[in-house]
Length: 82
Image (cartoon, rainbow, N blue to C red; front, side, top):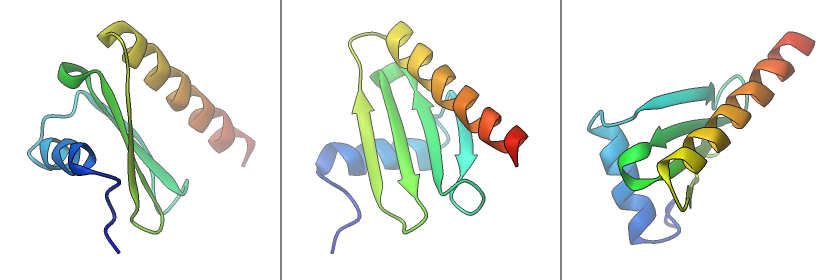
């Protein structure tokens, strides 16, 4: 079974592995999900605790950044509750 949904997901993961993330949050071991922001491609990538990879593409860098900020804030709220 392939951990990528499609070739775009695999390409975005390779970009992240090459160090081209603008920001990241979460942890597969602590939160169950890790998220990375790649503004150049208007994308947020996600890896879950089972190693499966997903992504979201947005209409603009601003929308990608706002969505990423919301995800990071939700993760911080969850950490504060625990």
